[in-house]
Amino acid sequence: MPWNLLYSTTFERMEAQQAPGGYLYRLTSRATEDASAEQICLCFVPGEQFAPVNVDVPAVLVNGDLAGNAKVGDTLTCTTGNWDEQPTRYSFHWRSDGDPVGSDSDTYVAAAEQGETAIDCIVTAYNAAGEAAAPPSNAVEIDA
Image 1 (spheres, rainbow, N blue to C red):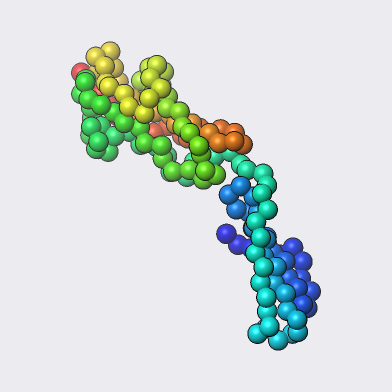
Image 2: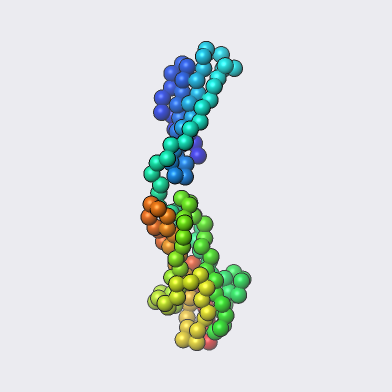
């Protein structure tokens, strides 16, 4: 992340950047204009945390593989995807052609009533600052 300049004089410069859980400040001080006498102080100040932000969309795996259709009885697994802002837990919402199917686990066994439908998963991430849902995962066709 880039440093944001807060102030600067001939002998001092203060910069800051957001870090997980707060802010990092960097103070550069020079006793003279000679840069070889430079001293740097870094300090962390706890601050506002932000709700999770999805970086990579979750994916549904069929029997551990990303490609292919599923058959009735196959186990589907939903990955969490990748997130910024340090989520502490996740919830999973499986859908069949956009309708909820009632499972809240990261795995789902394709049932006979899902034959000829597409199953996907929506992941919600949580931390102390809030929650956010990722876009739907890839859809997996269930062969009858």
